[in-house]
Amino acid sequence: MTASASWKRLVATLALTSCIVTGIAQAQNDANVDAQSWPAGLNPQITPDIAAKIVTEDHPMGSQIRLYEGNQQQMMFSARAIAAATGSVPGMDVSGWQGNVNWSGAWSNGARFAYVKATENTNYTNPYFAQQYNGSYNVGMIRGAYHFAHPDASSGATQANYFVDNGGGWSRDGKTLPGALDMEYNPNGSTCYGLSQSGMAAWVGSFSNQYHARTGRWPVIYTSASWWSQCVGTAGNFSNNSPLWVARYASSAGTLPYAWGYYTIWQYADSGTFPGDQNVFNGAYDRLQALSNG
Image (cartoon, rainbow, N blue to C red):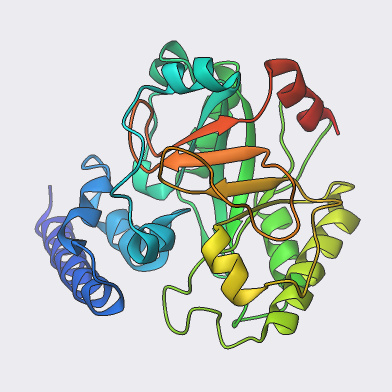
């Protein structure tokens, strides 16, 4: 390794360390949680320069829900046991934090679907998207992509276009799920991104309508009942078109956001059998296939 390369790696390592310390301090200020544990989710095989980018820019699905709602009661059973008990299909979701995923291992352990983070806001794309999105497909999983929303930064339509243009599209190949819109607590400020409930409902509507216009599918909406009740409430009803992906790290999915009568996917833990978050699809495998086919 040349002196120049060694220096660059040292600078990147120092930047990553600084980012982690800053992130921990911010998390401790934002919520009464043990923030020391959150960097452990970063794959140690990720190079320092990419790791620094991920730590500063990538907010994984559920990361803010864990901070604000906790995971003290999350289920610690195996994904296979939960799927067997609920008559559902086990799955997972990953982001840049997981780096290169061992997809054959996840398949062997029972995962049959996966969501992969594609984008955040309009300035971040997952550096491991290709390995994760194509790798899950290649082992036989039904997979989809998701977008972490920043409703205070640009319009819903603008972010929907960015999502579709950077991996969030859909095709009727029987192996691709509709894109998912990740709506959760603001990692950089006020819980509801400075929007009223009607304003947030309008933003979600703008994203959903544009995603539908671009792909012919309505997005899956990922959220928690607590965040949704605070930030959207009864101002918008998306239950007729968008499947619900509910996050609750407990023994049941609990009360659902307005006005969904049932969930399609339940994210029940932020760690477990599979890399990333643990999920179950609410139905048999043929219903999961039906969702992918539209």
